[in-house]
Image 1 (tube, rainbow, N blue to C red):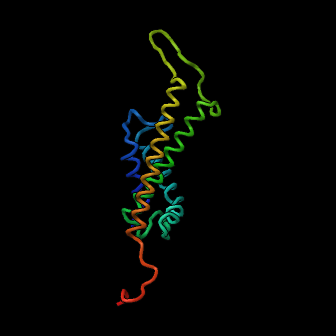
Image 2 (tube, rainbow, N blue to C red; image 1 turned 120 degrees about the horizontal axis):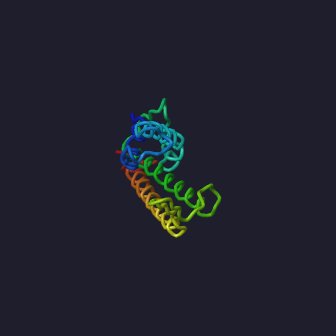
Length: 166
């Protein structure tokens, strides 16, 4: 029996390492950010159990946030599915700021007194977008390998015939 919230906590703690001073400005503390982000990740994991089922020919269903019989192998695939989606979404959001379809501050440099703020250039943003794309592709490849291994080693014969039945 595996609680999706424990997988979500693991994803947040291991993949999105955070310090209090690096917290998202939408939250008043790092702990609040962790709590709310874990809920969001948990809901994503639950919503995508069907996709996992299709990939590995299973029939997992969540009951109050808990998935009976979900083991480490299935959890690893679900985790990579989340990470691939995260990288795709981050890359897409970054591209929206580059092409102007998302609201963003339009400045190159702001100076006031001794302070200077310089916005990232389009080339820098494109480089980061490429990095997200590479991370997404790596996650996709890992999913394919995990699914292949799972299906190869977890599959059961459909039919037994001849001397094999003894």
